Length: 389
Image 1: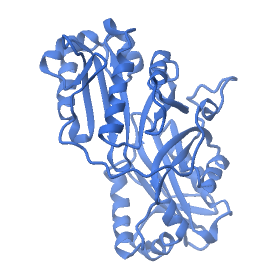
Image 2 (image 1 turned 45 degrees about the vertical axis):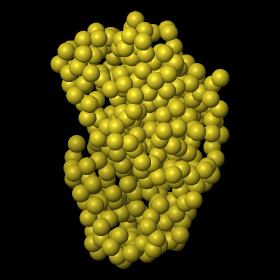
Image 3 (image 1 turned 90 degrees about the vertical axis):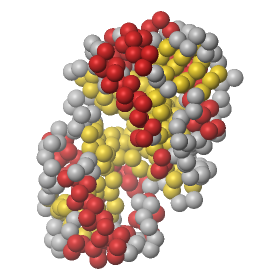
Image 4 (image 1 turned 180 degrees about the horizontal axis):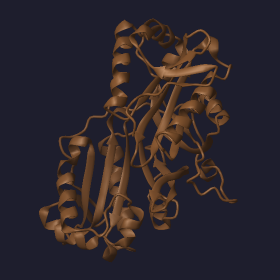
């Protein structure tokens, strides 16, 4: 992947990297109340913030996965907005956009043009196959820009971010791609949602993690750290059905791969990931695995799991997820717990439903599986949602 930021133009606007000459314009823009609010910027936004941003923007692409660009008026050369391509992942072929335009230049197509330009670069030059815009439900202008640029609605992310004094839901739009399965039965993912978006939800306290994840027990299960003695049962348990749905798991699954995973799991809490072995509470036999990946700044987490072949059909996954839910909301005070599954993985979707998760929509072309990209059902559970009896 190229590591130089682009210069893009369409005759009306120019997209280019930020420079220190932009600091006065950046300060003025970031002090506009709606830009400050929707972007959760420091207030008042000052000289130090702007200088730091310009430096961080240059490093974010050369050393990382974020491309930050200024939007100039092509005729005057004045900064009229900003657009970012964030979280670029060349393996999963993914990226998402964020943008703002100064009040005096809105309703002139600036954001739409910028989004179309940068999306074309991301698709054609970087080869990305899934591009998103995630906008708070109250930011109708950003949603309209996404739709005008050809992005289509896919999901509601409930309680996605803290915005001001409250948490708020966000809408996910994605740009249809040639690699997607766009057959005659294709529909926008939002049609699958079981939830309605809300602009305000209760705030959550600052998340403070324990030194180590606890051992979770209940419903005949024990969720504990992996041990070296789990290596044999782990390697034996990874079958083609597991690899079918967990695209990051190698096949055939070797003892070397198992050792690598056990080493990773042992240190994963440093990266705010808890990897639990699912064990029988009586004999401590290994039944599967469960992980909780925590986004600390935003007080949300994602839960994933697998069950050994000889333990399937016994409610192991549903019971294990139930223990994770109790810990997420009772022990950590998280605002949201995610659960995603391939839209064709009906067994996993049943686990989500039995554990009380609600479907928020379908993310098209999310993961490459072989020669094709597959759709994922995205589900969530909030502390306020009713729990299964």
